[in-house]
Image (tube, rainbow, N blue to C red; front, top):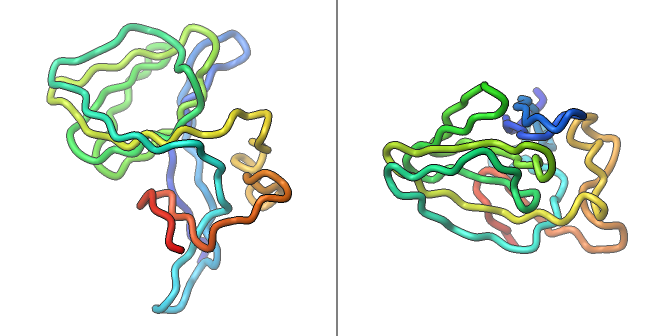
Amino acid sequence: MVAMVAVTRLFADQQGHARFEDIEIPLAPGDPPPDAMSVSQPWQASAVLFGHGPAGGSHGEQPEHRRQLVVGISGRVEVTATGETRTFGPGDVLLVEDTEGFGHSSRSPEGFVAAFVLLEPPALLEPPALLEPGTARLDRPGTPAPRCYCVTALRYLY
């Protein structure tokens, strides 16, 4: 069994249009014993922020200021990328990488709470690992990896 975490990636294509892509982050081991858990490769992050978007809140089409993981905690938000709209809620993970181009828009009729994990700039990472599991590490060479990094729970277990 190969364990994976489903993530929606939001990126800018070569023409600068925001697009969605469904990706999977591999976890190892695939079938852990009851006293252990499967984990992904570590992702270097600089901060975790918690945010609340009010009911009726929205923003027009714009690129994001930096790469980040957005993890839904409560409520719902609708994100539109080049005419395609997807709704994200509790437990959903969105990898936001459309830092250039036309960007995306969003709105939240009911409001939402999310965790925002600010990721290191792409120059410090090896993004092909997201698309080709097992081919590269997502942490900086020479830095110790945490013993456990769990994307879905957003917590380190030391």
